[in-house]
View 1 (cartoon, rainbow, N blue to C red):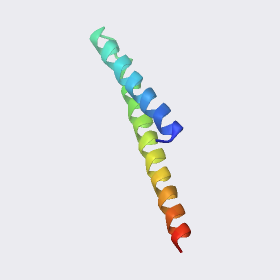
View 2: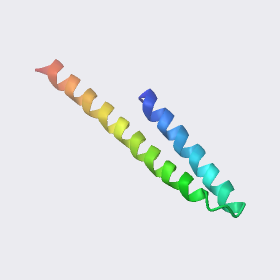
View 3: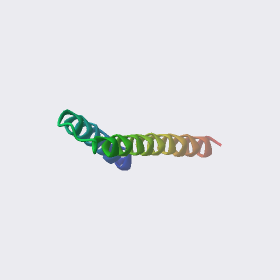
Length: 64
């Protein structure tokens, strides 16, 4: 798994925890944490798909 994808997943998990704690405390700042979790989740999936596409391109060029 690419390193950037791992970092993005870690940020996503921490943002979700921060959002839960924030909402449990009655603070509406949790909305910002939810948005950060969504952004980092999208970044993680992007990095995973990009690495998969690069791997497929490498195997395609290596076989031809």
